[in-house]
Amino acid sequence: MRHLKRIAPDYIHSIFFGIEDSLVSTTGALAGIAIGAGSKSVILMTALVIIAVESTSMGASEFLSEETEEDIEKEKVPANPRVSGLLIFGSYVLAGLIPLVPYLLLPHLQAIPVSIAAALIGMAILGLIKGRVSNKSQLRSALEVLVIGGVAAAIGIVVGIIFKV
Image (cartoon, rainbow, N blue to C red; front, side, top):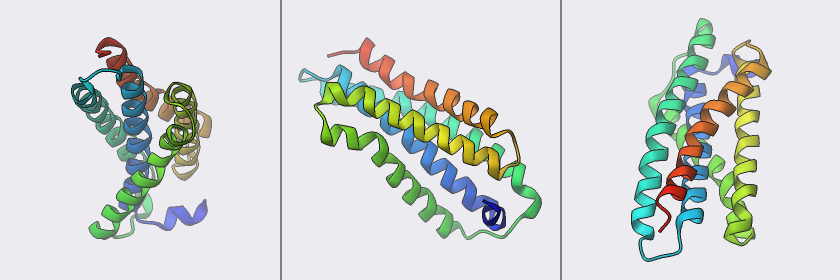
């Protein structure tokens, strides 16, 4: 993990932002849609879930990644915005596979808890790495990412339950 401290903080920010945002929004959207789908109003359901999850997720992601960047800012290395953009894109795509794979392998109602559990494990691992990179308590950092990300993902589930169509 020491080599991560030599990476530009903007790149670390992009990686954390992409992973966290994808885990949260993809999990919340998939779970919400799986719970709420079942009628012709799936498009409305999809829109409500994605709007709720994405807005909350972006706030959570920005907070967590900015905090991590501030913690490691001491050894600033210049960053290339194109590289940062590619890192956030790649991180988002790869992390999005974590909650998606259960839906590809299992019936949708069985996939819901597996997908949520996989994403929560992913968030906890991201938090452990965040703690290590920023020289903070890994446990505290893991809990922070888990709680903030978990709450944001839960919004998608709640919207799916409330607006079940």
